[in-house]
Amino acid sequence: MHGIGRVPDEVGHLILSEDGAVIASGGELENAEQMANTVLCMLTRINKGQLWPGDSGDAFKKISITYTDHSYVICLSNKNIHIVKRRFVPHEPIKV
Amino acid sequence: MEGAHSTGVSGVLCADHKGLCLGVRGKASNASSGTVAALAERVAMLEPGSLDPVILLESDNSQCLIHRNSGITLAVYKSPETS
Image (cartoon, rainbow over all chains, first blue to last red; front, side, top):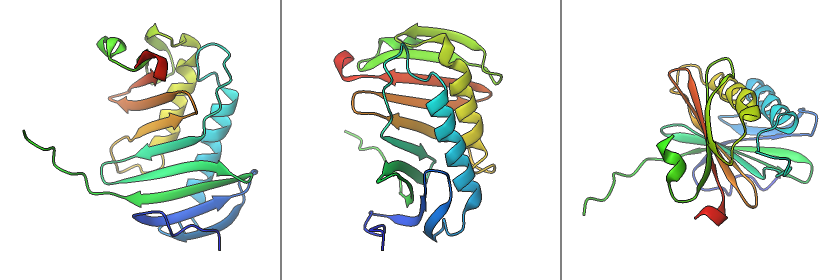
């Protein structure tokens, strides 16, 4: 097992190799090839493009894509790309 | 561009749907406008029926938030030294 499943509120996971091949998937991301392609395109774009001002070469460690009630979190670990889909229920702001 | 003066914000960039830089403030480069717009465009294809999400890129020392709305993509750069 890849240790995925211990992420709170996780509803799906996807693990890709460096070249984009699906190593493991589950939940709502099972066989999610479009997600895999999109993430790979994103990472390629980030690596090739000048996203950060100057030439600091700041490498991004984590990418979050947040929608209204769920989010995708992408990170690199052990030369694999880990993607987790998490649900969340936005809390109402506390009125003081 | 008023957000450029908010605490923690080191730079702000606006791009149109074709990646043209509409404006830049602080520690942001107009050379990033194409990448920012392309990222937002690509991510929007993930869930075509949903509102465009907020993209957060985090490194050890900085963050970049990207959001597209009505064809305009905004990138906000944050770093600890400006907190």
